[in-house]
Figure: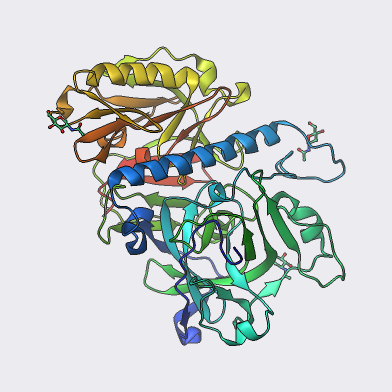
Length: 475
Ligand SMILES: *[C@@H]1O[C@H](CO)[C@@H](O)[C@H](O)[C@H]1NC(C)=O
Ligand SMILES: *[C@@H]1O[C@H](CO)[C@@H](O)[C@H](O)[C@H]1NC(C)=O
Ligand SMILES: *[C@@H]1O[C@H](CO)[C@@H](O)[C@H](O)[C@H]1NC(C)=O
C-alpha cells in the first residue's frame, strides 16, 4: 500500500515550532560534548504492546524478523564477495553496487527506536536503530499538491515528513556525481529526465516488493548531553514516498542508519562527535518507559556501570558495512567448545558481526551445533516444549539457573564477553524458556543479536577501532 514503509512507521508528526535560533548551536566548531538520543525498545512501545498478546507471539515475531534479516546479511555478503561486472566506477565497498534486499522488512525492522528530529522547523519521527543499514530514511512527501497543504495530517494513519515545510530540505539533483556514482551503493537510479530532477532510489526486493523515493540533504536537530541542542547540516536522508507490497511493522517511521558506511548517520555524526558511538540496550523484556541512550561522542556518566570495561578489536573492513569482531571461541562452563576455526574466519566465509537489528544470536552451523549440544545437556532434565520455529524450548517451572554453566564468548585478543544467562536462555512465555540461538547455513557470518547484547554498554570507537563493553543496568 502506498505510504506504507516496511518499517511499520509510526510517526509522531510533531512540528516543533521552537525558537530554533536561540537554543541551537551550529556544529561548525569542535564539540566537547556528546550527542544523546533516547533509545526505546521496540516492544516497549505502547502501540506495539497491544499487538503482542503473549510473549510467545512476540518471540515468533522476533524470529520471523530475524530470519528475513539474516537472509539479508548473507545476501549482502555474497554480493560483497563477487566483484560486479560493471567496470569504471570506483566504489568504496566493492561489489555492493547492485544490492537488492530480500525483503523490505529486513532493512528496517530493528528492535530499538530513537526519536529523531528532521528539517527546519524540525519534525519528529521514531526511527529504528540499525547498525546494518546504510541509508537513513523516513516516510516523506514533497511537492505533492493538495495533500501537502493539509499538513499535519497523516497518510494511512502514519506520520509523514512534509518536506515542503522545511526550509533546509535540499533534494540531490540526478545529474550530480553524487547521484550517479557516490550513491550507487545506496540504489540510486540512473534515469535523469532533466538535470535538476531529484536523485531517485528504488529498492527492489526478491519477493517483488519495493521501496522508493529520492535523496536529499537535510538538517537534523540533536540533543547534546550538556542539555543544549545542535544542528547537523547536510545529513543525507532518503525521502521515501512509496513502499509497495511490503507488510509494515507498526511502530517506527523509518531507519536510522548506523552501519559503517560513507553516508550513514554514524559517519556524519562521528565526524563531529569524537569518532565513536555507544548504546546500552535495556532488557528486551522491559515494558515500562525503560529507555537508554544512543550516544555519539563520550559516554561519560550517562550510564551506571556494573563492572570493568573490556575492549576488543573492532574490524571495520572485514564484513562491510557491518561491525565485525574477532571471535575465536565459545566456552560453556569453562570448557572451550570444539568449534572449527573457519567458523570465525571472515576470509573463509565465517566471521562474526554485532548487530542491533537482529534479536536472537545466529551461529553458523559449525558453531551452532556444539553450542546447542552443550546447552541442551544442561537443560535436558526439564520437559521439552515444542514451539514452532524455535529450535529448543523447555518447561521452566522448576528451572534452576545455578545449574546452567556459564557461556563465554572469547575474542582473539583475549577479551571475554560474559552475557547474562537471561540473554541466552530467554523467557518465551510463562513457564517456558528457549535457548536463544538460531542456526545459519554455512557459509555465513554469525550474528550477535541484541538480546545477547542487552544490559551492556557497547562503545564503538571508529578511530581507535575498538569495541568496549561493560555490564550495566542501562537505566
Ligand atoms: C573491485 O574489485 C576488483 C576485482 O577484484 C578490483 O580490481 C578493484 O580494484 C576493486 N575496486 C575497489 C574500489 O576496491
Ligand atoms: C549534500 O551534502 C554533501 C555533503 O555531505 C555535499 O557535498 C553536497 O554538495 C550537498 N548537496 C546539496 C544539493 O546540498
Ligand atoms: C510445566 O510443568 C508443570 C508441572 O511441573 C505443568 O503444570 C505446566 O503446565 C507445564 N507448562 C508447560 C507450558 O508445559
